[in-house]
Image 1 (tube, rainbow, N blue to C red):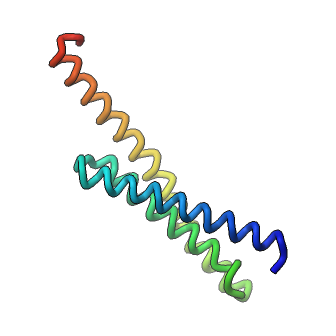
Image 2: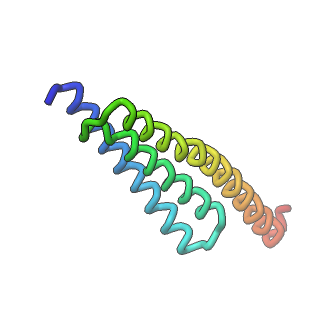
Length: 111
């Protein structure tokens, strides 16, 4: 195995580990708070993990060009939803935080 391929595989594995850690934090927050923003973020993270796994297949399995193209197209169908859900979930999380902050301000008389 060449050094470049080994480094590429190491980066893919590291990226997947980070994605799984973020997903576990989002699922944990969803269980604790039942906030829709964490559900949306978790779905976006799942799409990102699927995308990464599909795009990583050629590093471990040899495919024909036609098969690789089909896998690449399938992977891209998960990338756009990952982006959209990530942005939407972040917006929902910020809105939720703002509502909570406003409630605290009202209760403490700062608002």
